[in-house]
Length: 345
Image 1 (cartoon, rainbow, N blue to C red):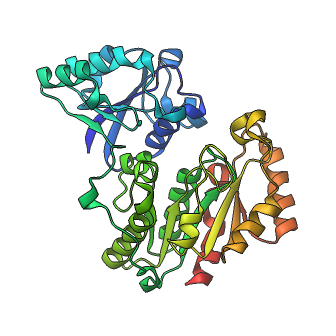
Image 2 (image 1 turned 180 degrees about the vertical axis):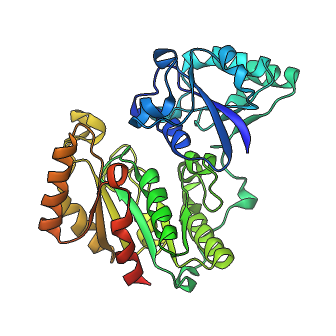
C-alpha cells in the first residue's frame, strides 16, 4: 500500500468527513499516514473520530505532513451535491507542488479545472477523480442472471443518509469471516473503493439505465470469483430520503432478500433538516421492504447523540419489539449477526 494523507480542513469531527472516517478506520488500498485538519492538529485522528488511538497524526497543513512521506493526497469529505470546498483548493495546490497525486471522490472533478490540471501536468502527478462515470462501452445492462447466485444477498439499508451503512457492512463482513463464513462486500460509493473494495461500482455516478446492470454484474463477478457464502451490499442514501432515494435497486435488481436496516433513534428529520420532512416510522419502513419481497433480518443503530446507557436501552427495546437482533456496530461489532447469516445459507 502506498502512503496517503487525507484533507478534511476543519471537518474531521463532523459527518461531512465520512470518507476520512472510513479510511481512518480501515483501508486496504492506502496506508493513511496523516490527516490535514487545522482544528484538531496535534491529536491522533482515531482519537478524534471515536476515542481509539490509531497512530494517525493530525497535521495543521500539507507542508507539515510531508514528514510522513506520502505519495497521495485524498480529499476526505463528502459535501452536499459533491461540490468541491473552495477552502481546500490551496491545500490541493500545495500537495501537487510537493509531487503528491490527488484522489478526489467528489462530483466536482479536479481534472476538469484548467489551473489544477496544468499544475498537475507541470509537477508530473495524477488527478484521480474516482467519481467520474464509466464510459458507455464499459457499462452493463441488467441481464436477468442474478438468480444464478445461490449465496444469500444482504443489503445494508438506512432510514436516512450518513447512518454508517458502509462501516456496518464492513464490520458485518469481518464478523462473518472471523466465524469462518466466506463473506464478501459489494461497495457502491467512492469510499468503498478507497478502502480497497474489489467488487462494486460508484452508484451515484452511474447512468440510471445501468445501475441495475452494474449492481448485478458486481454481484455475479464477486460470486463467481470468490465462491462467496454470503454477499453484503453497501447501501446508499435511503428508500425515502427525498434528496437521494435509493435502495429499491438492491431489493429488485440485486435480489437482496435480506436486509439489515439502520436507524438513528434520536434523529427526527431527514438529514436533520425539518424542511425535508420527518423520517417515517420503523414499522412503515419494514413494511415497505416487505412489499418488495425482502425481509429485515436485523436492525443496526447509529447512536449519535446517545449515551452508552441510552444506546443499550434502545437496543433492548427494539429487540423486544421486533424480535430480531439489534446491532450496535461501533460499540459492540456485528458478531450477533453471524448466526442469522448462517441460517440463511
